[in-house]
Length: 320
Image (cartoon, rainbow, N blue to C red; front, side):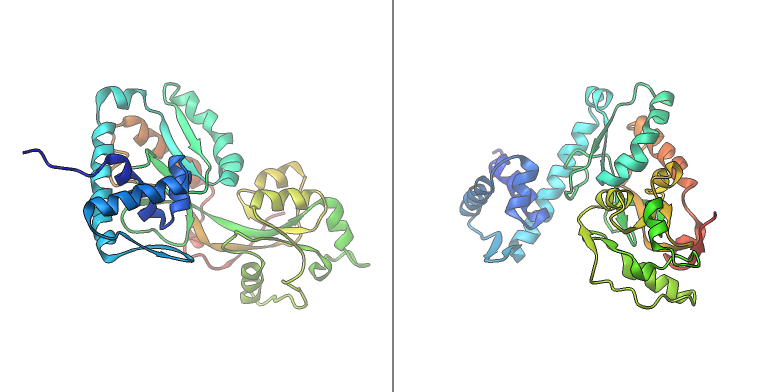
């Protein structure tokens, strides 16, 4: 007798909602309404005779039974995805799918992709910059680039490079900050903050203090606040204040002269960019283009990484 399985759409709704811990985020990922997710899961719970989620005013959470069931459902979808990827025709026609934050994609990745395409003209690449959690290999992605302090268990993480934090502003705004002796005084600057950044001005000030050159009198509660690093760089280039530049993302603006360093002190960030994939997803035997892409990406990233940055601490002086 064949096994009786719950409806596949309801299981897909459950897997996405359980992974995100949100009906709304699951709906956005699957291009349906939150109501459809909710009704689908209610039907699944009724057919199974068990409650999978705890509904609370502030959100949802998996029950013990739901968490246990999610592990089996996620593994089943992963096996289906892996089996599909291994089909000969599917592998031959499928592009390399990469999830990446928009600022890193536009400022670091895309300018280099022409080099990859020139060496592997038959390999197609898809870049997704949506801010959503990626499940390997269920969501169809081969790689993701993520900013993190350390690898996360369950997937393969390879370090690309760390960021270095340095204050930047427009040339005209830098002149505005100079005193009668020509010295730049950041205490008079409008600081541009990035609300979504894991490290911002406090991290830079703490790093400067470790070096013994603490800067007093800078008010961190004031200034201009934006929600993306890209917007902070644009605001700084317009003369609206001083942003915390993140090298190498800000290197293009420094090279063009749109931005200049407002301080010679560069702090190594405690986070780094990592290339993430499913375990053994880049096997040269299964999909050689993934192996080539990973090797190429690591080669491109190597020049931007510094061994002393690996621990995420320490002060590095910027060259002039």
